[in-house]
Length: 382
Image (tube, rainbow, N blue to C red; front, side, top):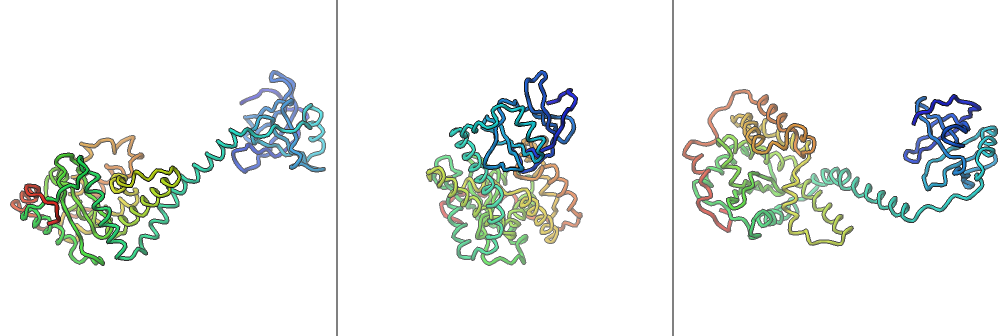
């Protein structure tokens, strides 16, 4: 609010606006102009003022003494003005007729809303800030047996959660296709030290296509068949595998599961509703990783692909196709995505390609076999 009134009989005090625990040194004066009888508080910016109706000004006895006067408004706000100048205190006492009238007690609704707001902010901070940091730390200390059990449990949850019939998705098990996938994984994972064997599977999602792949604790890396069909070369499938392997090696999958599980427990305890447990596995996959984790996995994949003679640019070409099919992750909405901006990821993949690729991930015959991997399906892993 702006005022054109020239200052007169100006005094100074410390103003707390009730939103920040920060004192602002303000000039205080009495005014009887267009706004009625008011105290005018000129803010430090020299442009804006706060107007306090004199009739609504009250003393806070518990915050005042012989040389300090603390005043507020009788409107349940928490703004305060502290005066230490005796002349200023006398001016306020003269101008404000109800100074000695007790403040109205805070509204019960205001107290309830304030408490609820503080609680909501605290829970949000716990879920959005504290838990991700804690999960990242704990992931490095998870023992192998616990990680394997965690991965097995969530793998079975996801098989059911992504099925339109709630029955577990079947494994794609055509022998030649399985052999082709094994060839890709063996080439990229060669020399990677893990405390457990990798468990790579392709799930039949033809009834409800989910072009995706994901990693879980314990070395579980899973492709949906629709992602293989979306890919235009075996090198693109290999690039996705390298990316997911990065999540495993860098403990992202463990941290993600720990974070989502803890969040689920906290929210369920607060709401008293534990009925969403069956969808927890799907939530872990669909919620994705943080931007930082996705970027780290991209970098790992680029380095790994280069080491084994495959083109990192293949990751970018698949991203580009996904960008065309799912444009919501680029442009003005990119900052809302849990992934780095797609265009930036495409550029990074292209920049990492040194042009030193050797043999493709699969021969033409093997690539066709991989695309036909769901011609045979099974309830059991091949």
